[in-house]
Amino acid sequence: MKILVTGGAGFIGSHLCDALVASGHSVLALDDFSTGRHENIAHLEGHALFSLVSADIGDEAIVRECVAAADRVFHLASAVGVRLIVEQPVRTIETIVHGTSIVMKACGRYRRPVLITSTSEVYGKATKVPFHEDDDLVIGPSTKRRWGYAVSKALDEFLAMAYWHHSRMPVTVVRLFNTVGPRQTGQYGMVLPRFVQQALRGEPLTVYGDGTQTRCFCHVKDVVLALVRLMDYPQARGQVFNIGNSEEVSIRRLAERVIELTGSESPIRMVPFEEAYGPDFEDMQRRVPDLSKIRQAIGYMPRYSLDDIIRDIVAYYSERIGRKVGGVEARAF
Image (spheres, one colour):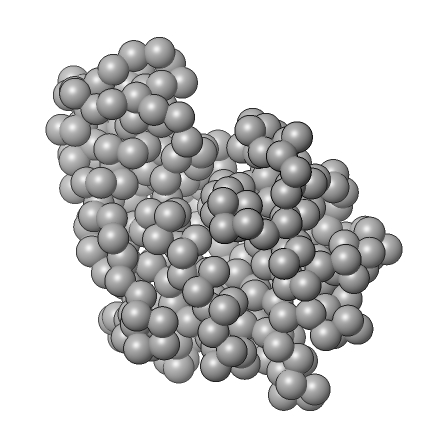
């Protein structure tokens, strides 16, 4: 098939392009390189099954042309990262809401099956853990910039479901829980690549807040496999699915584990949220997915443990700086 991946030069998008090309599909990646990087897909350029369009997701004519040429669409283009969300709230909201509206309109016109990537952020300040897809969404006040991302993604979901209910438009929504792995950068606040890079450089690992907040990290390869399987599963249409890993860890313990696995002598430095993101920042204490729905649908089970994930990221950054760390093999991704 011919498959369009918006945000195809991004962290997750590039791994998805790899998997689709490896499966024999013809892939068209659309990216404006605002957060995506050419090096993520450089190895695919020149491949007979891969092509790239460098354009903004807000360019309606180009998006329409790309969708018309595709059999299926994975919509991953989005503003990403806590720091970008806090520092550029207007861009965040406009990119997410306007971009998804354009993609959905084009997919609706040509009746193309589409998978929309949302986020665990939509659960907001909910305290019922683990988070299930049918739980209420508890969003903070509009005066807190952090929640602009969650609300924008929630609006994407409502729009997708509106298309489904209106015309049975073949659309599936997934909520991603802290996807990590090789190629992810710490540029916009992603915690694990930031910790690994700090540890490899012998710098203090900066833990924001008191470090007791917990997260569940999922390897990008597990996520990509789930995306592909859900697209191939007709019963997933008109539904929302969590994708993640249920192995919960505090951010403080995550920093300690990175130090252990890299053999680094870096100290841990606690940084108040106000210093990192400004005085109006709010965070969630726990974020744990209920994976029963996706497990029942496609037999999803994460294959990579947290230590596996850390080792892969260490190997990736070790290769980039030309060194071997703690017996971890440096390899290309």
